[in-house]
Amino acid sequence: MEGHNSGLPPLEEPCTDCNGTGKYRKKDPYEFAPSLHCLTCKGHKVAATEAGKQIIDFISRRFQINDKEVQRRMFGD
Image (cartoon, rainbow, N blue to C red; front, side):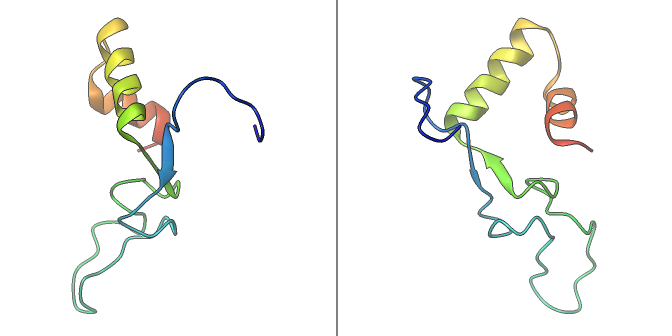
């Protein structure tokens, strides 16, 4: 929400691995791409900030969900 101050720091930011495109960036043209989507943001174009990672960690501990399950539910496979 624009103009809304929740008191929380930003929880996500444009993904730096794909420059916010959501696409896997090859280092060279002959590299095999393991996915069409960026491996960090899973194609969502944003990645968790340090504050966001702390929230994910809290959710994992509080609800006894492993990190991969939290990532899958929040960002897709």
